[in-house]
View 1 (tube, one colour):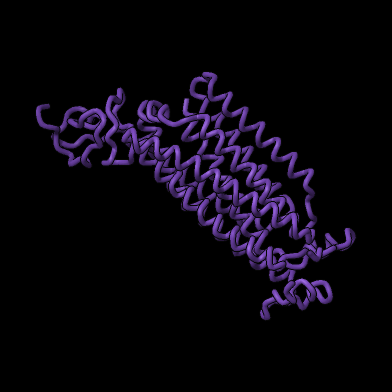
View 2: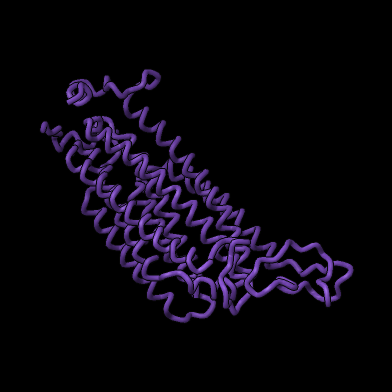
Length: 140
Length: 222
């Protein structure tokens, strides 16, 4: 089989002027990603109270950053990084403003109810409920 | 061997893969890369909707999510995370092989990536099958008996929609990698023309990245 040989010195210029990252870097990044996976699984087994989710998401973000910066080569690719990060910004607005709304909203009661609507009124324990109509469940 | 590989090195700027509306291979590559990144942003926002929905329901019903996630197998989830991370590595090695015109290595790494994607889907299939048997299905199809906390069906709605959409993306990625493999066997790719390998690689890493977030949110609630 014919092998397409390329001289080392023209590699960088042929690869559209982008520096070519070598296998050693990629292997190292893979190793770090696997270690971080082990860390996140271990951390999930320890009780940090409310910080468990935060820790898991920080580790996930670290892993995602490594994938983006090295595997997706964003550290040498400013324009693509700007495109990607602006997409993430819109996602952050979407998520953060939704959570503001969830966490600051006081419960609204329909006129005919004196108490907050309980979780899944009248539904069997493991069955999905019908969408709320705002009327009191029978018998209450 | 096709004419592609023989002419490529003689006159790089007249590669048979250069489309007439581009001035050179570099410009063609940069333009397609911008397009790919814009597409990846739309993918992030597509999954973003599901992640925001998950955040709302998890915030409102933490006990239900906590209880429901015990039905998932942590070892299988971890195994699949490792499989996808390694497949991202083999994919990036495929890109490197193309950039440095190592055709045999390119074929090897693309095949490995395809194989790992298959492993991921087979493991996922076993997991799904286990859920089906226990009646842990989304929404009104939830028939599991003996729950102690109400509302666990909601977790499985998110579980199946999010991992399902992710699985469809893995399938699409496998299609794209198969196409690359066919072209690599034909000898299309070299350091002059490796755009398609690079772009499919970006897509594959995004699919990996989404799983990096899905894994702790689904399997590691505590």
